[in-house]
Length: 500
Image (cartoon, rainbow, N blue to C red; front, top):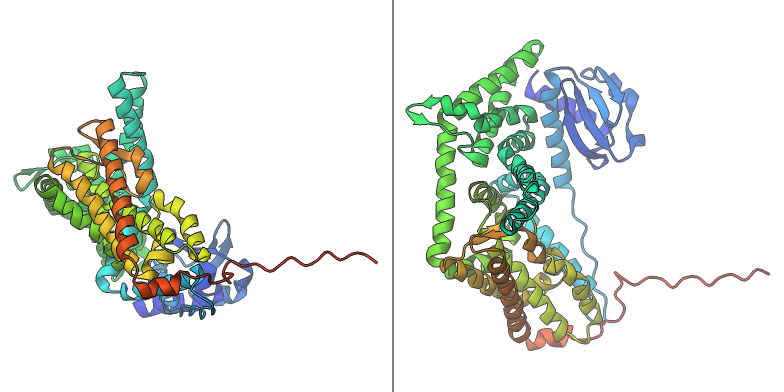
């Protein structure tokens, strides 16, 4: 079946299941395209059954369109691409004009949303789209990283205190089990993200952690189980996707279920064993060495740069490139030394928001937004403050970066002095990072340094914003009572009718 025919089949199916907006999830098995729907009533069952490529439909927990072995693996990527293209082409709603009488939090939110959409459009470059796909591989792993990281910290605490020694081995097994097989999950997600069969990506990545690789002599180089880690798993699964697609381009549909998975695992597995594991292992070691030497040799300056630039990196979408680096460092050292420094950007943001609150005493609308978003900001969720307050205002976003730079320099300085520590998982920030911190100097010193960095970020972000975050004209425009905010105001309830 040609690519054009596969795309034509996908294009014929899409409107008959309610269009792209009616689809919440897409997957496939050996013979069926499985779709999760928002509104089942929009599906045209009889028209679907009438399509030449459709062998039948089945309704279970998902809506299943039977296409047959071989065909379904070719049609599904085209269907996913059409859904993504349709959603990307949908125009964003224009923000409404601000009301007269002053600037409200709703106006800032509209400006922030417009800036976010504009930045999202600018981020649609091949590099940034690729980085977004890399992030999609690792983001589903974050809950397990957090859970196992906290358990590992608890296990370390109990070990140091000498409490309940019988529980320690059990906690160690629970905390380490996921990390020992993280390469398999990365391989599975990589194949899924790039349009291959997920389990084949996981199967190829599983080679990396298989203990038997120690018996293989790869051109005189001894292999070790786990060599290459998540980078090797990502590369191996990505190779498997291309091999699988190549096989599907020439293997007859009747033989697809036998030949394609066999050749995919065989070819990708051999290349992984005799090339990718070694290359990825060298790359992983280089990343770990560079990160540790960077902070050991120039920690204060490195922390200043990392903490100060992280918010702009988030705006540009380039922060996603750090996710596999964090994961590699956790896999090697048990924690990532970069995340506590990058978390200082959020501290600068919180300090800047508090300064906005005190500089605009007459603008109840903006102050209410700051007050409602601060609890999330303290826990490391900065988007409400970024897009609702600092970024639309402009200068407070810059002063927030200054606060992040100061906090990063504080934490980096202690790395330079030999007190290295990091986070055992990625995802949380702010106060939520405390349970995940681990270091060589002990829990007390590690927690104190991180808390000190947050305080520095808060203080410098506040001072910089309070004194340099507003021009006189900005204060004249903003520090007024704008009246009721139409985005939050509600109509008065109707009067209760008195029966006659």
